Length: 117
Image (tube, rainbow, N blue to C red; front, top):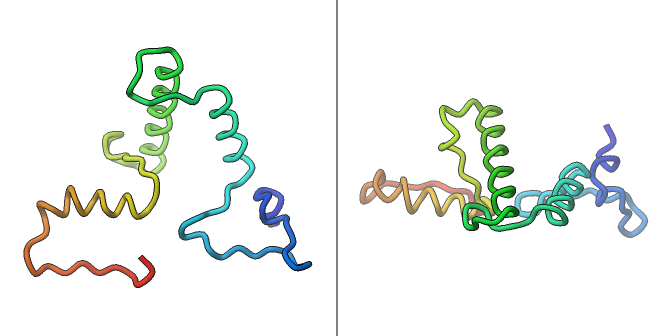
């Protein structure tokens, strides 16, 4: 397995040494398939999702909903409605805390998180 073949940034050398990237918690490296897919999307289809009535918006919405269905199937979700896309882990944690947590947690309940979060 040679990650640098799929992850272009890992092919770099820093100070003459092969790059070993261990800070993936906030900025995970992208494989070529993701870079190429995003690049194509931004060049050909980028538009607001669920906000417009024009063709590009409809295309972007259909693409996102197709991906939502694929993710639901992949993780065996009971429904596609269980799949929520967020920008990152912190946004996801805050979304859960301010929706589900607001109604499920009681005064004096404890929430345990790692020091890193």
